[in-house]
Structure formats: C-alpha cells, structure tokens
Image (cartoon, rainbow, N blue to C red; front, top):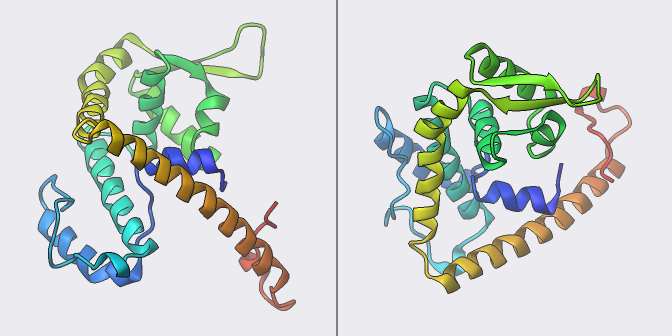
Length: 216
C-alpha cells in the first residue's frame, strides 16, 4: 500500500529497506550492537558521505537503523514488532479501537495482525469483543493487565520519542516533517508509476508467482 500518509507515518518509525551501497556500514553497525541495545545511530564518520553524494539509500539506511531500535525494544518487552505497534496504537487511542482501524493503519498482512492480537489476547493484555449492534466487526481493548503493561512498557517509549523529537528546535521539527511529507508524496507517485511501467513490460512467459497486482 503506497499511500503518502502511511509512508509519512512509517517514516517516524522507520522502514525495512537498506541500500546495498550502505551494506558494509550496516554490517559494522550490527556487529557493534550485537549483544547490546545500541544500534549505532550516533554519527559514524567512517560511514559519512559528502552531502552532494547523499541518496535515497542513505535515507533508507537511517530508517533501517530506526526500525532496528524499535525491534530491539519490542523484543525486550517480549513482543513481536507487530504486537508492539498494536499496543502502541491502542495506547494512543485511549485503550480501545475497532479492529479494522487497527489493521488499516499498518501494512502488515491480516494474518500477521491476527496472530499478533491472538498472542496479546493469550497474554491477557487485550480483549476482543463485537462492536455494539454488530456480529462481524470487533473492538480491541486493553485489559486491566494490558493497561498496566502499557504504562510500564509502551508509555515510556512514547515519552522517549517526544523527548527525542524535542531535541530539535521548533523550526527543525517543522522542516523535518515538511521534507518527509514531501518525499513521501513524491515517492508514492514514482513507485506507482514504476509499478505501472513494470506491469506493462512483464514477459508473457514469466511465472505467475512473479507477477504482482497491477498498480492502481
């Protein structure tokens, strides 16, 4: 789902791709962080590049490092990445929200989200019940144990995000969001155009498993 808003939202939490040109640097960072929580986000002069040579791979690398931070934190909470973000969204929503809305906010598959929610339910952290007047749509809500867990694990991470964001000046925060929004919008257009072009260029004898859905 290449939606500008979802791309912008994910930019705050990172993405899962990393440019091949940064692979050697990424390997060094991973080796340095092995066995600890640090993922090497502090400036590394050995990986620094002149501004004129900066490209999307460098941005992808930074997003990948941020993703790793959240992954390590979620693992420390005893959660999968998906389960962590489900609790994060529930906390942000005040403790409950429709399951369909919870699923729509992320690009995880329905199966992954369902598995994450079942795991959280088995831990006694969330409860699923039908929406009032419906026998199909469900609401996911934090249980008392879930609220206590969220207060102990999720809220501190959210507060850490705010403190980190506030290390930037007001103008820097505005500019960061403006540029990410602009980049996300441009990326959406380019990815959609690329997908359409690729769809028309697929050889007739290419295996069906290689042919993805047509871009809208």
